[in-house]
Image (tube, rainbow, N blue to C red; front, top):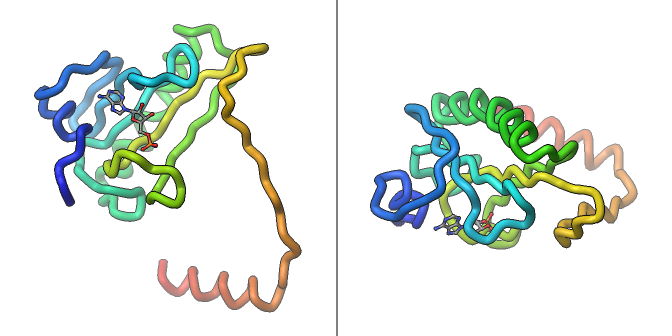
Length: 138
Ligand code: AMP
């Protein structure tokens, strides 16, 4: 994959406000925060999307995330937060290097972030076939 701005940050070529680092993860403040304490958690492996991430890098990401969430909650006082993870242009991903947004939420602070579902009717026959197809690939 091409070199993203996050690879440059990981290599220290571009500065960031770092909050955490270990052998597989770097976390830093988002430069265009939706709220105070908006953090990006970035695997050091240069995978574009979650589906491209290796098992060891995914394990490192999963291990770091709850710790970082706890620290963000304690530092900001936010009682709530969203984890947002975009994969691909249609999903709103702008930086093609896997990252998880940790977005603290405060009462009365309108981030503009809405979880707005438009659920459809469920087709059990098609659903069963699709579930089998996905399961076969795992
Ligand atoms: P996404 O739409 O999920 O790809 O989000 C990319 C995020 O990266 C955006 O929220 C940007 O504000 C953030 N971002 C881009 N460049 C930087 C940077 N140099 N330092 C910190 N955050 C950045």
